[in-house]
Image 1 (cartoon, helix red, strand yellow):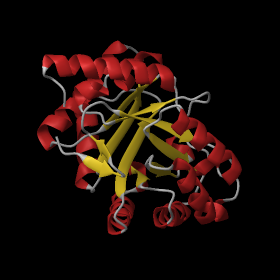
Image 2 (cartoon, helix red, strand yellow):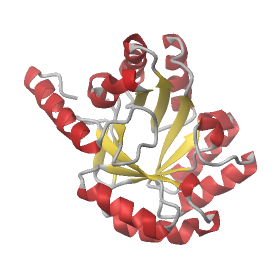
Image 3 (cartoon, helix red, strand yellow):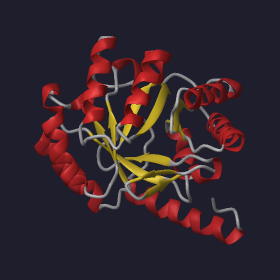
Image 4 (cartoon, helix red, strand yellow):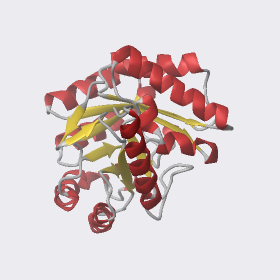
Length: 256
């Protein structure tokens, strides 16, 4: 499987890397959250820019946040209300904010929402790549887990648009939903050779958050006091379970 290298992190190799979302409203709060997360062992950090009180302060805030993050890669995310975020934005404002974020120090990986349209996604992904950064193309369905074939097609389309990491988060209403999402991720890994970010939200989706290594999912988002999505596992527990599973897979020769 192809690896995605970011600040020395090999995403798509071995155990999924843990991510903690930072949802502070200003630089001081974000720096404190970043230091707490890295001290607790998070591999990566996600900066949820949609929680920033003053959106005109993205660039200076990114500078101090980057210092606090140290060697942990930063995923820069402007999550809109349509995708479960904190901002209701006009399309052109979304593009402008993502552009500012990509050009700042606050995004080693830029998150781009699939529902903003193919042209917007291609342009923002290309911008990230021109700036020598990586791109996640993401889609969230908070109502259901779509049919398996549809999930495969969504992930494949994200790759067609240039995603280094296609991200699909769906709501699992039972264990079968979770397993179908993992099946879709495994299919894309096998057919295209790319790592995914496959998340089944809710209580029934926990397996996808902890056993992503089994289906090619490279990142898992964890809670550190405050969760950013339904069903997130506390970071300390996730680190223990993921490490144990990784060790077991290594002994059986199935480590990837």
